[in-house]
Length: 249
Image (cartoon, rainbow, N blue to C red):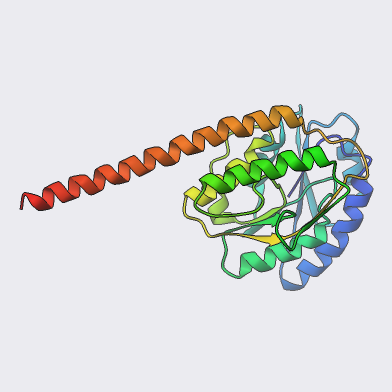
């Protein structure tokens, strides 16, 4: 599933790379490429219809731009497959790397994220200050969550659909990507990551507003800290109540 917003310039590259991925995945079952055009004004949907004709694809459209999170929810609601892979439309992660996500998913995991910050992952050509903010946020998530991952902010993931439909990610923007992973971790899903290569965008412009998104992550991190503390207090209360009951027997 691929959310798109004003990506007409990069769609030819995307469709070309998707061909190899689809050909490989099709050897072991059916494959559908689901595009979600999130209110593009540059004709992205028309370019997809023209260049994706050789792919087993569908396209969903939002009449206006609603944000990455909203596009993901639209796609998740319409996905039919038991395994759902989300890809960036700008090919900063080469789609062929999704094969590793699927392998890890089929090894018994519920959610698998691609990780350029993994010791075996790598980053090429990405602006350093953006890279620093992303790595810092991932480290903060690492510090407060019970599952230690190197990357929490990457959209490049694979999900088991039955688990995906239970996840909570209400934000309409980029924060939703982290919310999905946090929801999976706190819900007890089996979460893993595989090394990935992240490269700079070749076509078009990024729609990420780094400072705004960074602040939204910080607010959400505080919420997660509060949520975990509340759950711990509830567990302690339950244990104390149980002990008091036992003592009165």
